[in-house]
Amino acid sequence: MEMNSGSCRLGLWYVHVEWRGSTVYRVRFATTGIPGDVPDAIRQFCAGRPARLDSFDTPALHGDEVYPRIYREVRKIPYGSTATYGAIAQVAGTSPRVVGQAMARNAAPLIIPCHRVVAADGIGGFSPSVEIKEELLALEKKALRKLQLEKKANHENTQQVSSIRMKSHSRALNPVRGAADPGLVMRNPTEAGALRSAIILVGGEARRANGQEKYFFQYQGKTFIERLVDSLREVTDEIILVAKNKEQCRRFDAIKGVRCIRDIRPGLGPIGGLHAGVCEAKGDLIFVSACDMPCIENAIVSYLFEVIGDADAAIPSWDMEMLEPLHAVYRRPVLIEYLRNHPSLSLRSMIRSFNTKYIPVDELRRFDPMLKTFTNINKLEELDRINATDTAKTEPGTSVQVQDGPDPASQ
Image 1: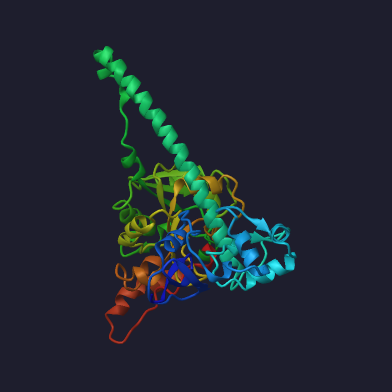
Image 2 (image 1 turned 135 degrees about the horizontal axis):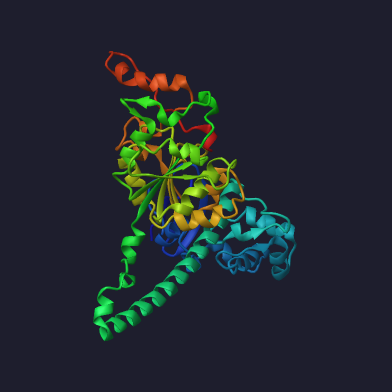
């Protein structure tokens, strides 16, 4: 049987796999992909679904030497759980140091889930980057939590259906009352799940714009906020503006078709504003934007809503480090759970804790070849630059750089 090789995405990384039949010979992590596919179970696992990989064999599991004994014990660690080097050493009849050496030489990570082996006082090491270990552990934790939420939701839906049936029976006994009882109207759960919200954060201090209200800057005859609202209302069911206080909210009274709410946790930056907006949003999927992005392309927003799949978030990425967290789609239940305690004020830390689907920006050029959608205006000079773009395009040989990456302040 021919040896197969291929790769799939794991967050910002690629997982390279070499296998034949049900035997996996090598798994490694890299920053670039290779041609070819990987076994479906591995692809599902890397996408954040609790796929079982214990049906795969790998040569390192066989033999009576210490390493095979260690690897067989590591395979017993359940999905979403961890064990210390010391605990594995005890059952394998060796030392924690040898367990660490075995993990470093593991030729088939995931198949032998060495990411689940941690230090007694921390996460421990991982090659080529401990970030991969953190992402794998977070991925498994989130997948299990999602299953628990789905089970809870199914239970609640069952109770709701039972309640509706009881009320329907009551209507049959009392048709006059039942026909006029508005409490008996039940929205289709599928329709409810399809709701899409947009949150625009407008409460920033705008220090780099000398404190001026960037959302009222003009571009192509409209204010930034008008352009944002016009673009987003075509692909979302509601638009929420999050301001720092009631006085700022009044500044948007003339903007139709939006709700403005005030920050419930002032001083926390984007995380605080995001929390306020998520608490008010009705959609299960939420697009989040800063107010200084006047060129947002709604076709890209719609695409992010579509490709999120079973992930917790769909985040455009320029490379391994540069992300667009304020031009992204998130799942509301996951945001609510995280923001309830906001363990970190960093958007990057929040994203790393999610089962995130990273979308390379080059994948979005078919909708917006120049990627103007990511243009953010922080300084008055940048406003002049973007306003000059259209006229510059008419001059032969003139090129204006509109976008060269995300705003570092959003990382």
